[in-house]
Image 1 (tube, rainbow, N blue to C red):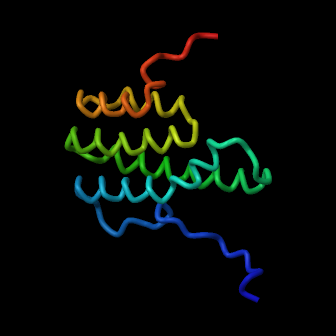
Image 2: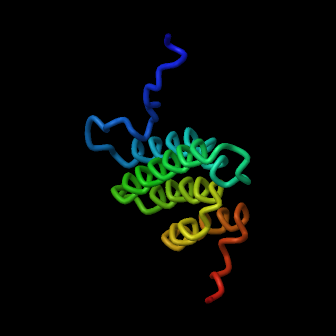
Image 3: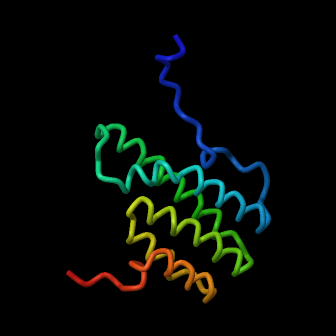
Length: 132
């Protein structure tokens, strides 16, 4: 029966890229990845009401999505477009309550207007974590 098959779910971030992406295509792919991964990121960031197995599956999906998006972002040559793409990834990290990665990515944003927008959306990124 098809309902009982445990076929592995295929996500957009698991699809291989056919050719090298230009900056616009790379930014669009990052946006699509972040939108598709928003649900699993929210499941990771929410209080755990699910079974531990389900939570772990969602965590793995979120981490694969974020890693893939970061790898694509590193190849974008236009600074403003890269910063805009990184902003998408920061928002994904914040949905997962992954503040450490969100802060690291926030520091990689150089465009002042994008940085200001991110701070308006996620004010907790402004302060550095206290030591200890």
